[in-house]
Length: 296
Image 1 (cartoon, rainbow, N blue to C red):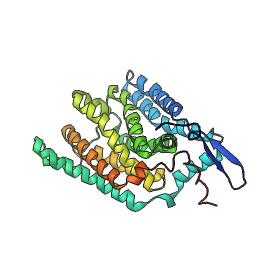
Image 2 (cartoon, one colour):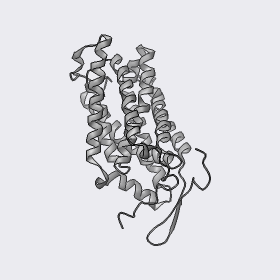
Image 3 (cartoon, helix red, strand yellow):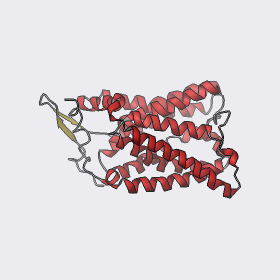
Image 4 (spheres, rainbow, N blue to C red):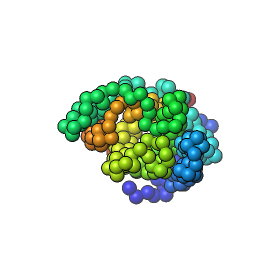
């Protein structure tokens, strides 16, 4: 995993013969994403819930804003074209893979609930909840929050973030690093009244499970991302399904701990079945080289 100066630079030539050089800056990106999220989320801990909701939403869109700014100020036409392709390139989406990922996650939920019966949980979990886990925003506000979390988050994390790590290493290690950073990004939400994360504070096990669960899930989203040629749209669809199911299926916190184990098992199977995808290094230092070739 040692990074050389040569590997850290992406060089390519456009159709006019102009050479472009762009160096991804993952550490700087994550610093800015955390900063511009937490400057809204930390104050939300101390204000009224009405104001806190606004601050939470602003923090939620921060990574997407930072990602877009990084791309637009990069001076790289190729990087800008890459973002455009990932955002609106419907031709990239492998719909069968997205459907397969959705089915996999649905099966994860089914298996988790069935296994939870051994720990005294109920079959009543096979039902939709009437409310959402976070309070104070109403049903409409909750749906908007889920939509933003599913759509806008992916613009930030897939628009720049994951590629900025993947440029320097294989996707297995990228998924691990991103999963840890993405999980820890949620820390302030533990202390904001009315959030799903704050509701976990009744039991330290629930909190630990939340942060662990995001890591293997990151591998599954990476699988969706890469299978559709780095399509943000594919990830948005899968993320929206995951968020909705996590919110509306009446799983108990105990069952969600079981779910994490099932997600880990599913992740191992997916990685084992896609070893070349996760462990190849052909893309290292060359992520942007194919951008535009399919369009010309």
